[in-house]
Figure (cartoon, rainbow, N blue to C red):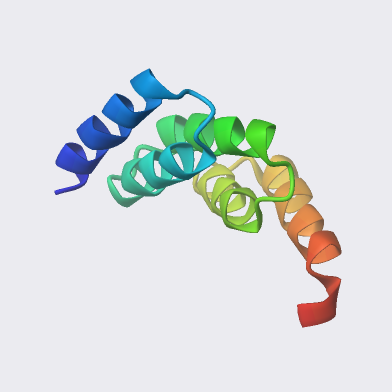
Length: 88
């Protein structure tokens, strides 16, 4: 379950709080549970570790959109497009 995944990611983060994959995975789990604020926090932590993390940037944008924070969501999507110009 997503709740169990969050517990596992928290254990990883206790050992290494700089693990961007654990922050991203926890963010995906929070997002799946529609815990938008918590997911945004996790994606922000992943982005602090790797500012070019397209998955976290895009997912953060989706969560911000769900929170009706459209300007902030658009900024995330713009950054994804800028970082990923070759695939657009």
